[in-house]
Image (cartoon, rainbow, N blue to C red):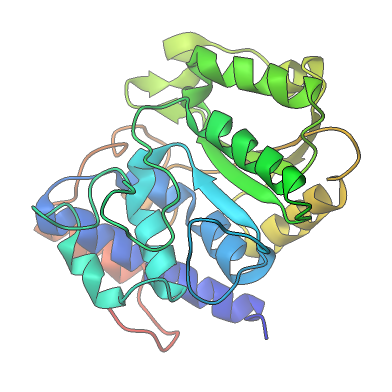
Length: 284
């Protein structure tokens, strides 16, 4: 049985706590984008994706997810652990030497749930499209989901992949763009204004929809369910997810400053106070 909205919101709070504690413990990591995508990944793994028990790299007979903007590994690791892929206690090893939970996800350590190494931005969509075509070759009707940063779209390889997917009618993929308008050096408009991302995807013949409340569990589920209904109709699907970087921690929101900066002791305490856990789960 899928968790209800309250349970999903409770889990979101716990994942935020995990993110904050992980980056604080090693004074390293990327909390901003992780906090901004927490609701999305919780909804994806707990409600939207059709997943099998256990994990294998073939992924036959289930939906698959590929994280392209790999620097938001804290939220990815937390959601994977809280979804049963590996022990929650392993979150305490984040970014430590010889840990399976490196700053950017890798495959060589065999961490369950990780299907590609992501660190160099701009490559995830190419991998996801390849997986989607493999699904078609295997007569497997499940969906490929991927997540990308809006600043990441400044990388050229994305647009080769976007062109390819529509030309080859890869219609079993839903590529979600975290549209928070911020990247490491400032706003995306200041760094490299891309104009209308929606218009660009539509010009490349993608089906495009937007989730205006990208930090609202119910809005995400409704929007992604709509996106799923548009698959299998000859066009790849893009979801523009409007999020707030640093969501859930007031002093991390509305700024790019926390893209890749860890909170100090006092800041951690303040952030955890804003995300007190009432949902029955506990810190690792």
